Image (cartoon, rainbow, N blue to C red; front, side, top):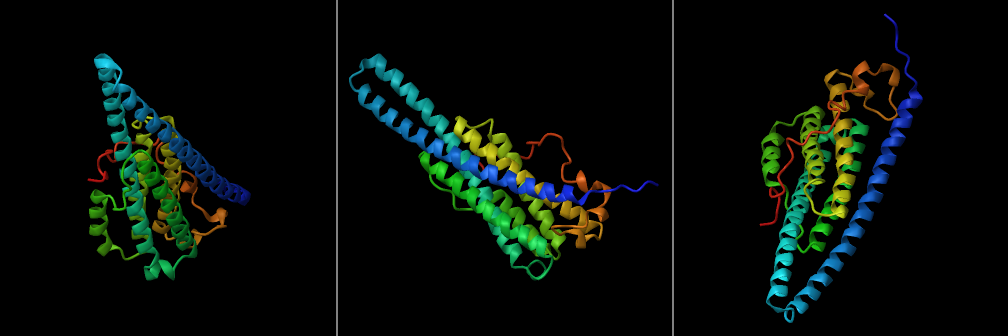
Length: 264
């Protein structure tokens, strides 16, 4: 059987590209949030102008103004709920990763897994902050609670977590829900700015999941020593390059509805 020759420089390039992807996502997220803040302020000023004008616009004009305001309010309500639900998913992810970081077999175990958890926690904190900032700019409240549906899943799973593989499996579930939800939200929110916001965060969560799937495969194959950066690429199984990407297009069938984490 022919032996595959793997250029270890490729792994280094992929690691660098992964870091670049997150940096680009942060830049786009920040820009989208800034643009959304500016547009939200302009919309509030416009609504105040229409409300003042409605008093003297006559019956027909006032009715048209009222119709427009109701349509805007309905759209804003859906946007706020989508942002609050996203923040609730991020809040839960932060809590889970923090709990995982304190487990002895994580804290004193594989350094790469511990570093991934620390870095990913920071990224989820930034995402939660961005979603809540957008929600408040849209006139809603910040969501500080975790997603109730998946919090129940986590509570059920935590007593059964005994190994790094258990932590990885739970994290995969949360990252997948986040990626699917934000991917679907791109088509559900009403503004270009919010679509950019969700579209910039979704691939970061998908990247987290892809990394975790690769780690899961290595752990399952008793190759935990290869969970390292840099790793010994020559020893990686042939599936290492594809296991993190089981679907050509990211699915959305498990996406959370926009109402799931809305502030009541």
